[in-house]
Image 1 (spheres, helix red, strand yellow):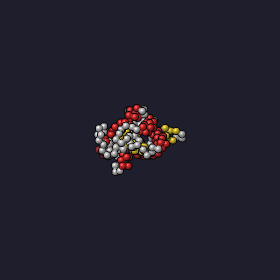
Image 2 (cartoon, helix red, strand yellow):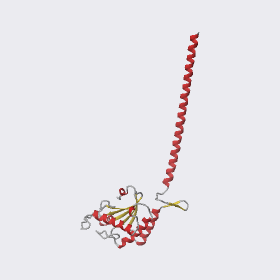
Image 3 (cartoon, rainbow, N blue to C red):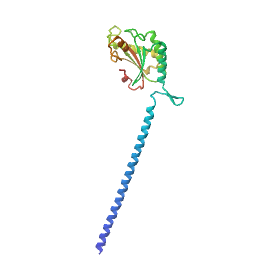
Image 4 (cartoon, one colour):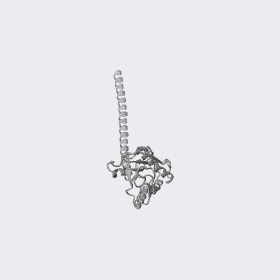
Length: 235
């Protein structure tokens, strides 16, 4: 009888330990399920919040330092200056000589060399160019953005004592415009970069005199960012 009672008690003790262990496992499983469900809910809420904010930001126009006026409308200083410059060009009848376009890198003011900036094969600014550049400088002074000045030529070769190739001519024209904007336009020199591309980045194919005239130009690019400014060279 004594042995039977002892074995029964031992069996009962083992069963009680297993029950306690099973209860602990059940509680841990329940805890992990609860934590997982809480995490899934937070992810859903975060995703919904991010999507809502993305929609709100996409609804706003892209601008640099825009000011909120009136009933919450945003005034873009770049667009303000573009409107003023376009009005000046219209008043002077220069729409065909000065063109404004938007690119990924920013706003580009394209000045055709022929008839506006330079004589053929020259990097000396014409009197008519100074009036246009004064208006461009006024627009640039109102903006903090870095500015890239690019000289471009057509594919007709040039070989003079002063300009052995189109590389020297395009670089000299870009540098001349930069110097005018600094000395006469009051633009801080550290904001400006000048580069010459010769005939390597035409706007249109050099297949006719009219197309070559479009490619002989100086582009003034108002960049969106100062980082890696040179990689934003035009086409």
